[in-house]
Image (cartoon, rainbow over all chains, first blue to last red; front, side, top):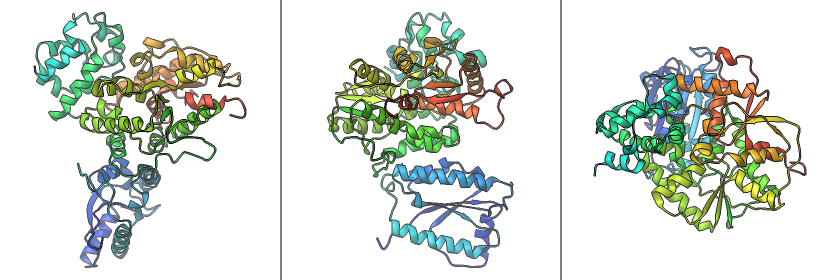
Length: 139
Length: 384
């Protein structure tokens, strides 16, 4: 699968990671255009369902990016996200979707380079994993 | 015949004499005066199809089946609701799903043909087979334990506990990684297409294993196979049994022994196992067989209070009030443990008990809602 281009849904928090992605853009840092970014107010708002639904609709990977621990705009939203994402990874493994297709990263507003690098790494990892087993039959 | 006429015919809604017994007994109507089962049936009889389909009331019913049980003309109101929901979805009247519909997505995801790891709980000590007479349908209880890890993480122990009990009775059940969710929550939230897909997969898979008896530890799975699968697919070619009935048979044959205990518990009749399936006594006899003292709550059997939510749809103020009522009843028995066979009941009650801001009435109450299979496994003779 050399021509396989993964489709990533990236949930970025408004205060850190979305701004980080913006910075990557205005700094003209090159990174693969595999992600569809969805802005959320806080990673703590992220329901496991958003992730499950993304996979159900045929995403190859889901990236969740928020403020570093201790820097959450809402004090502890990212700590909640950490717990929820760990459980969702476990669930994805049991469902046979592979928990590695879900990735959690802390990216601050000043880390445009980290955002670009995360996208590069994740895209590479997903190419190695191949297309999602749910891709064929998209509802 | 139009669809609604067909539904009215099939569920006996034409027989309704508007006596209002359903509305007077309905636990939702007691707390939400705008909701009335009788009114819905009358509207159907008057041909107000569009109004029923587009009304939110179709999602307010908790399908606890108290109305069916008490109706003098045996109108199948719950069946009416189940089928009208499919119609409601088609005209865009969607339910408010808990956790944005995570359970529904999870159930659909089991049936997409990828290789699952659903037997992850299986250890070397547990003996299971690939083909045989007895199939154990685990359902989605392990997955629910992960999804609701903050409320009912012990659900993850249910499948292993059941296999341990069966092994102790000398039975090696068939379990399968090809199994998919039974689709209960999808059907009751109106997603008939996804339900049928899951149903076809399950029936074919179980027939391929050559099983004659399928055992369920989940009340909803049992109901879905016995009533809904048979409705949609006809004869299944195998017999379905609840774990409590099956274990009692084994005890009568002297194959299973339980050690005695001096604990004191109460038992909650989940609506699927009780009113829907009519299984009231086997779970009680099994609990008593451990020597445990079973203290009954004030509303039991046909009159048992429901956990307040069905198929993870429309959880709200009414549900919470019903849960508080039930927990108070349970505590009133003087026990600290309430046993049940329904994983959803466990999740909903624990949702209340684990919440950060508990209602005042139950603030200081200490009670545990526990799966009955785990309880029985703890009382196995020889270590357990």
